[in-house]
Image (tube, helix red, strand yellow):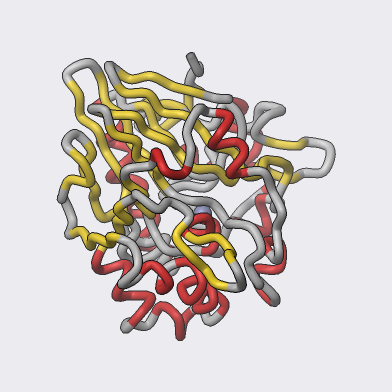
Length: 295
Ligand SMILES: [Zn+2]
């Protein structure tokens, strides 16, 4: 179990999967193999599988324990979901994510807040579970919190038309919560709970949100999919093929990397491999990724 602590706040990684995933030339636009030479810290054996040329890709949730509340950030891909086509790697999964949550000492009933940074297939799956043929909330006591603009993008906006495979994701992992669970929609800059601020970080999805804590004893940010792999810390201009707006995603990376580096935040992204979190350092006009040390 990988765990970090910042001041009085504890952040635990709840694993769904981790292993060699896509090759850099598959996931990134404008990738050049010569780029690999310049950034050894991004290519440790836990981040890059040199033999196959594949980047490690984790899917996990972050469990934040703050002020007596348990906040689950993103809910991975989920089990039993029907995912033909583009998302077939997530089709009818049967993975022990829920058991991993329990191993962290937390039952689904204990979760106070579920916050989804954005509504992609690998961030909302465990919002619901299959019970008697119906999708029901996995966390019966929780308030589910989404960015209002992100929710509208996928329900009444152009999201589903732009990425038709994600419509089924909304239908089985988001819509079944409405009218059944407590659901709260956030605006940019609002608190999820005291001490955790959600901020729009556009580009990957247009209204993706990161979750930031600025504490007297240090800060951190759950950085969602602002970057997928530390290679993008060296090359912030390089967006993934999943970005809705690649140019905007790149601008957001430049701005946020500068901000997080100057604040010294612990950065908790959604997909890099072990140790799964790090610091953005600024050095000679460039950024570097320094892996963090779990407690
Ligand atoms: Zn993702």
